[in-house]
Amino acid sequence: MLATETIELMRDTNEYKKSERRFSFVQRISFVLLALILFVYGLIAVRNFLWPIAFGFLLSYLFFPVGNWLEKHKIPRILANFIAIILGLGILFSLGLFGYSKITPIAGDLPQLAESGLRNLADSISGISEHFGFDKEETRNLIKEQAGNLLASGGQYVQDIFNATTSTIVSFGLLPVYIFLFLYYRTKFAYFIMMIFGRENRQEVISVLREVSRVFGRYMAGVLAVVFILCIINSTGLMIVGIRYPIALGIISAVFNFIPYFGTLLGGLVPLLFALVGENNPTMAFHVVILFIIIQFIENNILTPNIVGGNVRVNPFFIITGLVAASLIWGIPGMLLIVPFLAIARIVFSHVEAMKPYAFLLGDQGTAKHSISIKNIRKRMRSIFSK
Image (cartoon, rainbow, N blue to C red; front, side, top):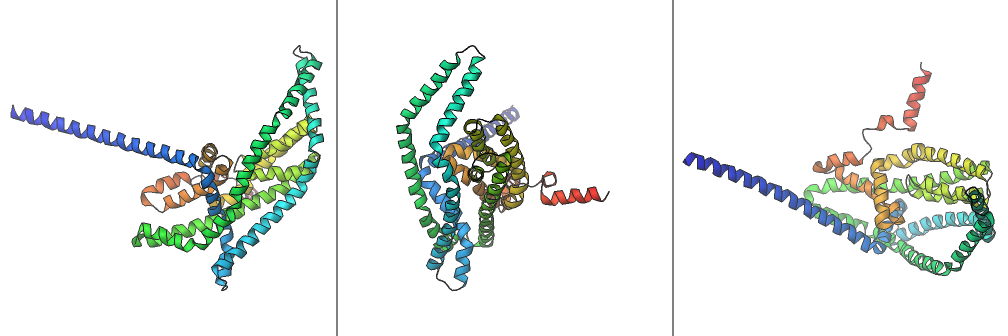
């Protein structure tokens, strides 16, 4: 009888321990979910404060090589940083002025284009509605009336856009300050991180910081190179198609490629809408669709993987899901920032033993032989000609 009671007591004890472990696991999951929810809420609540700092951090890596080179040539850090920022912003401003000079013809003809587009849209919709038994003239007048009401009530929308634009300009105006501070205090930040992780992890931390610096600098330079190449490809393709303002539309559509994967599709909508509404030419619109399908293939499979992707090395699945999540949290700034910060997560995970499986999942390893890269194309060409 005593043995039976002892067995039952042991069984109850084991059941209690299992129940306690289950409760502890549920408790940990609950704390993690709560922390994640609070973190995301915090990102949304202070996004207008955080995204300029994040952009300043990112752009500081673009200007770092110039500032570092000047420091090595005995120029004080403050002066070296000023020179690097002025040179970098001067180049970006010059490119922006060039793009603006090519876009201004569209701005000058915008009233005529809007009127022509409205007329073409009204004619197209009224023509379609006639096949469904609606009066063509009444449909046309209704569209014109609704468009007039939209324009009449557009003052408030313009005011809202102006306020948002002003806020954005102020945020961008702080970027040079943030860039300078990140460049000036970079050594202090590095020592701070090393102090957090301790002397025993010093070499590992230095390795992570160097890799992040290399990846960020090459990523920024690579993205700018891709956008510049696409400006030429888009403009040339639109010239061949025969659309008006090919250079302006090519530059506008290329700028969208600062957003990975979706940039070409979003940029292609601009000349497509112009061909449909401004030119009222469905055949030309079809040619634009074909053109941007080809450009999308070139950009996603050749340009970005070989110019940018080799530096970031992040799984496209997580890039796409990250873009969607970042757009929900920070909007367009989030879509521009998410890829390099995913790269940081991959680099950090790859240097922590327990997190290496997550680094593998985030990375692009395991599918290299299936990718369309210059190296793989050369291999396939050699195998074809060797037969």
